[in-house]
Image (cartoon, rainbow over all chains, first blue to last red; front, side):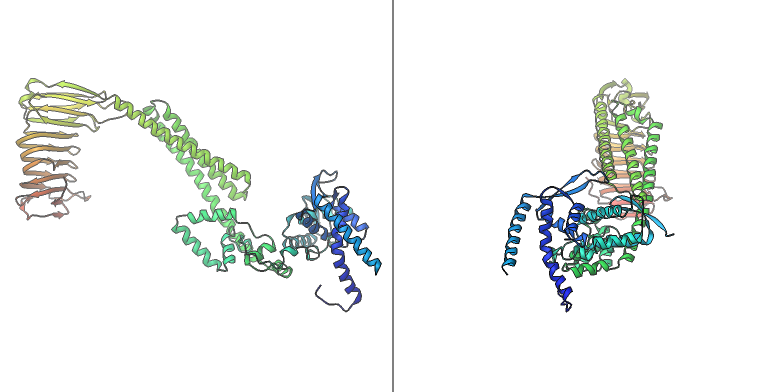
Length: 114
Length: 518
């Protein structure tokens, strides 16, 4: 992000990437908020919502959210293959998500006012 | 047709094109170096199997280079995946000791220390070997403990922390690209050589312990030691436990050999080795304990069976002047002769001994017959009370002659006899056989005339005169006769020559003068 591009679309893309980064956390929390979700399902949902380009970035993110106590995982038997890891929101995660939701609402209002 | 090989992704088996495998392994390897979180790599591998499934590659199916390329673009490059997802660890200098497996010969302990303290690894290795020799192996123990306690530097982050370098994305990238394959190969070669030597030594150890167990068993049975000591059956148990511990030692060596040759150092093997070591030590110490207890017990039994018996001497013993004392068997026997008006004999021994007395005129012979019983041996002590003797001949016995005061006495003894004199004797004549010994340093003796054979020893206190004779031919084995004396009033005569006062040493004889033996 330290490089300065004269190309407008690349510059915009790099700004969007930064915006997306924080937003991605919120999306992941939202996907997991209703019921425990398998990683591939999370990826599929984000893909549907056109939120993810490179799948791999989800894994370190999930790992970090777990470390920080927002997500917890449980193992579930799978019909095809080995047991799968299902992620769901912890109480702390729910709290964070609610607070983020209100922050995003505020941002939306700001946008509308402009 | 491209060459196909096997691969496991998240424990699922596949067939894979060789060049595709190379690319895939490099991909996973880089990923592992970028992240310190093994779980992330494992989850991504699981995801890859699903992507393969979506692409129509089932377990045991064939993965092509195209599949790998598609996976990489879908999952993303390691840089994209980890990218700046580890902001917490960035720019942190947190030096920590790891085992450096990239430059290791064995466990990477020394190379880790060398990297950590920025020292030369070869110097440190030489130092370690010297230290191991000086501390007779204690340093090796320290090495083993450190091998177990210090974690290995597996990830790029670990390697940077070992060097105390700041953990940045650029540094991780640089560390990932570092080529350490030649140093790793060297380490692997050293390890396999060491394992081979260890394995061969362990096989030899196993064979030797089996041989020792077999040899000990054969000698125990052929000499009937168990029957001889079978007082309480505890000897049989001790023997059984000793054999068990010997066999366990063989098992231990075999396990080590197996582990060295099969490269199999699993937790289960370590557990089995621990159990074998503990069982072996317990059974060995139990065997020793029971053995010591058994010896103590049978000694106690032997002691308690000692009896004191009085034997009468013939009436004409009172006029004896010359006495020959002998042992009936080749066991050690001790006879005390005490000059006393009332002739009698008192024998203190375990059952099975009896003195035989023969008197012819002024000559007599006392022979202590018997050899003890099957439970063991305790030296019998025969006390003979009788008249003052002019001449004593000792054969294979230890004689202790006690008198208050007498003019003269002749003592002659053969090779295995020992004699001790106490009291006051004006003139002593002694003839010593090979290896015989005479102790008279407690007695008060005037003139001494002594003839010594090879290897015999005489100890005297303060005397008036000494005439010593020994063979002219020196002993071939260097076992020359010795004579120790406190002091001599007159100048001593040795082999007919008068010598000045003082010690005297030749290859044939040694006179030690002024010895302060009390």
